[in-house]
Image (tube, rainbow, N blue to C red; front, side, top):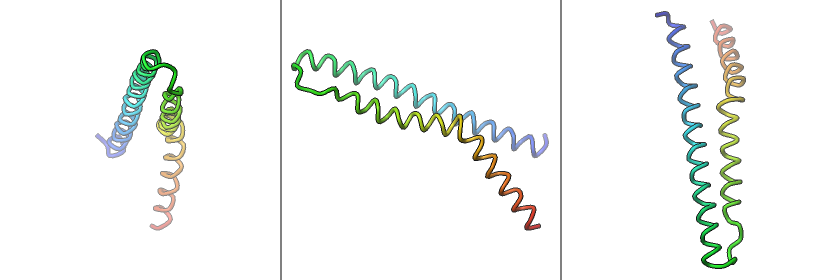
Length: 96
């Protein structure tokens, strides 16, 4: 196996790892937020309407983080990594 193929396989492995981590993050976000909304729903019926809709804060705040995680894994990562790689490669060639 060539050195460039090994590097490509390493890169694919890294990308797969990041995508898997995002999918796990999103699944945890989804399940935990369902739990939060259920707890709020049952607690407001038992305790009366003394609580504000507090799950909206966790859903929105954590949702913003999930959106940025998605963008960094699926959208921004390829462009910026490729640009930085080409920049470093050019600097390396200029230094030789």
